[in-house]
Length: 329
Image (tube, rainbow, N blue to C red):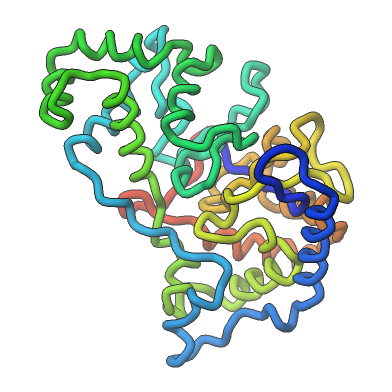
């Protein structure tokens, strides 16, 4: 359930990537790695501050999109409602705690082969899940309801349970003009999930022109992040989440499959240990070292690791005005 590191090779949109794509990806990584001086962070000054965001490959997290407050309220209520599970013992929030990091460390459980990704900023990714097998929030929600490891139910069964509750029926009637049905159930949950963005990270403030938002060490770490080639896969508003890549380009990264995963977002990554789809990296430092070796064939110094972690810690944003925190043990 936590956010993990991705890989720096073989982008694809469907099916195995052709050899030419792999060569292009490698060239891009080499190019980025060979232009460290050119990739140094811009010097902050009165003339540069307002244009930083336009110069950088990472863009700030936007505020939540406009939403009908009545539908949003229903979605928030349902997200914590155990009636969404057949046994009545789980809610969405059980695995995606929005009061901490939107996730939980559960990768070692036999029933959960994948470390669960955070729900924060998920709506900003181009696909969902580690394997990227869902294109829409609606499809992902239905799959979670039907998954025997998760809710073990379906939308129709959930709608039946909700219609037995006069209070929530009235709430749906006020927001949707009718009692709960499959369409309004999914829409309410999607409306809430779209609101689960975390703007206001210190890095985003720096992109916005706040020169005091980052320290010299953090800016150095960002420059290293770009010059090493990490930025080839971790860029855009979610610092990832917008392509597929192969794990273990130069050296093995994790045991088992899949070899190709959707690049995860690095937003709030400092709060979402453990890392990788199998949860095998307990710390961010470990994840950084292993990623550099497996994906870039680089052995980092302790100082380089420290600077990269300094930068990654600036990607922690705020949910409803409160900084995202790590999950409780």
